[in-house]
Image (cartoon, rainbow, N blue to C red):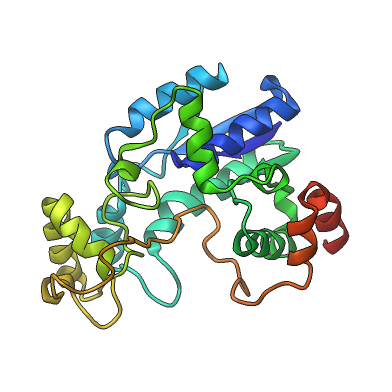
Amino acid sequence: MIIAWWSAGVTSAVATKLAIDKHGIDNVTPIYFAIDSVHPDNERFISECEDWYDKKIVIERAPPKYKDQFDVIQKDKYVNGPGGARCTLVLKKWVRQRLEKDLDYSGQVFGFEYTKKEINRAIRFSEQYPEALPLFPLIENKMTKPECLHYLESQGIERPAMYHLGYGNNNCIGCVKGGMGYWNKIRVDFPDTFTKMAKAERLVGNSCIRNIFLDELDPNAGHKLKVITPDCGNFCDIEFTELLHPRVEEIYAKPEQLEMILHEET
């Protein structure tokens, strides 16, 4: 069985389809970590992708006391910091680690796209987590996020609502990894979420943005035209991603050799 980590983002959705087409519908299992604070349109996107795959997406969750990032913040008294976002650990990473122990898998599909930055991440990831047996179908097929969007829509599947609103990813609404521009957009688009996070920060004495609480944030601060929010995937703790691996250019030129090159590296 091949696990396809499905995040409700466009890259993971297309990566899953490519994996099914390559390895067979019975050999790929899409798995989604459900979190209560995502956009309700995700339900529509899940349904349309299931019809596209002709296969159900398996829904998994963290323990019941953790329904979203606000539960994690309130119960564990931590927002974000040098060690990463606690909510990613609790809501995704621990769930993934449990499934890895329980499932007999022959590979794991990730939606890293065909850019030099993402190829670098793929190499670093493969070096640090060889036991994951990672597969990167978007890189192998030279597909970027915009191309994934186009492909989805060519199949009659509308992009998730968060993309329509101008967000670069389909993360939880109120992602603790967002910067000033992101949170000022949340202030406008989802004011109740902004207020809720501002109160949660004060409750635990820890903030999303370094050295500033949301209730102190200048409404004009941050990028206005391009919202930048890190992808909240299952592996946010990949080391050395800021250092360009010497084989990035080679893979970028010959992505069809990715699997062979990564096997050599590990």
